[in-house]
Length: 567
Ligand SMILES: [Zn+2]
Image 1 (spheres, protein in one colour):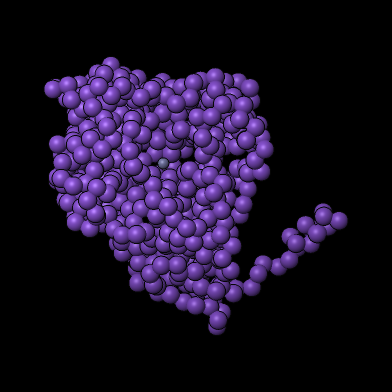
Image 2: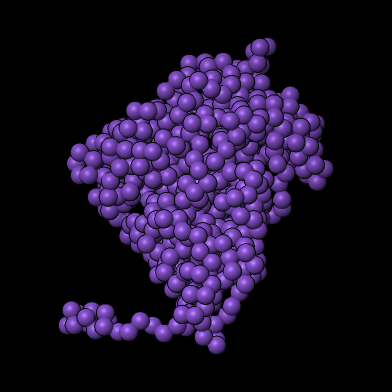
């Protein structure tokens, strides 16, 4: 019966020329296998039905009811995909008011002063999460920096490391005699007194809380706002890289109301601090799996966080953080190499359980030591059963090595990268490790030359402004950083690792789609694919290189519908 039906379907004549929408007179960069540039696109019921010259498309696809848009020579790209964001956290971060850009200790101090004016005496002020390498001074603030208000306890949230002002230390009873908490440290100054820096010891601050509470409806509104801002930046799909069941419910709510402006692929991140048996049974009991869902909302990878962050001196490195680590991260042990949160045997058991459920696997790994450890586990899994078909990948993988690249190539492991960090973080990191030890810091050319599929992402987590956020989610800024490898000190980091404009575009389109098992439906402008497009204000392929970061979207189209801007 089914065979007959298939035969009948294939015998049907080609559908009549009846596009809902034709975009013509443009420079349409298709990102198909031969990177063709065409003039016109026809769209019907949310899908691309044809591409080609103005004449051919108008002749074959147009009917009296077709909407026609003249692009006036503008460039059209496939809808851009940011493979790595944290949409809900970012949405909430400025939901109740905007934050300044914390790019110097002075901006931190100004923020404290301005908040103090409206807070009662004795009320806590917490400076939201700030990455010390992004501060102009490139040093971790101490109590002296935070002593700008006499009446309020102040805490600076640097993630794993916090800092507190004198009043906060006093109110929390932290003195030179306070014992260090297990695994944490109260850092002392040359005078033997606490200097305010608390490494993995922020729990000692009595009354300082990092997270505000939000009602469910606020979370839905914040997520909706953030996704709309993604659309306004030219993104038509994102990968949300740390979803829990509670967060999933927020995404589901938006979807059920048909209010997702962009497509979302979810990464399930589990809390790996618990006993391995508990984690494994949670994986086995879960009804989630890779590729579950539809074109709007679906599951991608399964994730654990294997090491800390390079921004806080906790990414697990192959070499120590050394003397500059003290200044930048408040570290006291020059031999410290960072922190690994999961031992190899436990990681193998967790990943093995997830793989048995059909998951695409990934782990947050920034330091080289953590990358190597993840690849060891991938190799064990690969010996059990080839891992390549699962499209498993290294997440971030900042500190690569030639050996790691070779192993990824051999096993068919992919990578999710944040080239914006070349611009923002190399100036501080090179003072820590020396540029000579950063030869394989985001080695983009090496990945591509080895056939390792690279997805581009921002790791956007705080802020609503596409250029001022941490990290900026403006895809054109990130593609510019990918192409130029320039830092904010205007230095080019290993130019032999530069990629072309075409390759950078693939990282934000077809390769990101491949990571999400969506390359057959998204990532290029080809007949049969979803009509996800972005019209931009200058020619990506031929504009001056420094103009790439200044490209602005004119209209963002998802599923054949303009979700932002106008045609
Ligand atoms: Zn992330």
